[in-house]
Image (cartoon, rainbow, N blue to C red):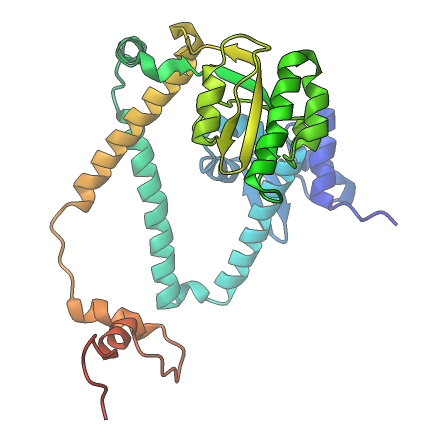
Amino acid sequence: MKPKTSRLGAYVRICAIAGVAALGSAAHADDVKPLGPDIVASQGGTEVTLQDVDAAADKIPEGDRAGFFDSPKRIEGIVGGLLYQKQLAAKARAENLEKDPLVQREIAQATDDVLARVQLDRYRKSLKLPDFEMLAKEYYASHKDEFMKPGDVVVEHILVSTKNRSEDEAKARIGEVEAAARAHPDQFDDLVEKYSDDPSKSNNHGRIAHAESGKMAKQFAAASNALKTPGEISPVVKTDFGFHVLKLIEKTPDRQRSFDEIHTDLLLTLRRNYLATQLDQYSGEIRGKPLQANPDLVASLRTRYAAPGSTTMPAAQSESAKPTEGSAPAH
């Protein structure tokens, strides 16, 4: 049996398919009274207006809103969530819960949360932005080293491990490998399969990218970087894993990326960093104002919310109760 689709979900999908702007147009199927021009949906005596949806949408980053609402499923979720919230709130008002002093404090805090968010957003929009295009060109010119595309050294390697054989046995075996590799470099793949003790060879067949990087063993990286011509075979290299012979597959040098290549990303980075710096300064001015606090009340918060009957000792007292190093234990 297929799960039932919610009535609201059906309305949303009908409206989306038909291109109808208001969900209410589908409500007549149940002989519900017509909705007002700004009413998106109603349920249980509550209504969600376009303004309600606008307020909910304002919490979504501006650049993400279009994509968010381009989905009947997400529209269904946000409208259904608002209807559910409004119905719960209506029940709370009917029971006079909003008159509870603690609830009033929570409502005031929720209002402060919204106003604080709106104030920060207003400040952000009020900022006079610099010429990021000019700043990007200046930054690129003076930080070109940041825009180098690292080269790559790709090698194939054969490992003769010293884990389950003596060093002399390993040296003799890697000597055979080196001789065979120099005699028949075109058969290096076969040598990998025959001789290599590297367990990853079943996946990479001995091929290692960025073999010159700091992620590799120092001796391995140095030997990889020393190879110049594709097909070149390295001398035997010793690492903590055992003995290696390398074959250079490909070597590409570092490359300076052009301004056009990094232009878009650099503009976004400069803009993001500028806004973050300005907001940090703005917030710092507010947080940096003279502060007064009641030390007794602040200290009381450590135990104010402890479970009734709890005998847990506050952390500060627990730490201070421990004997210091060298002190005699209490009797």
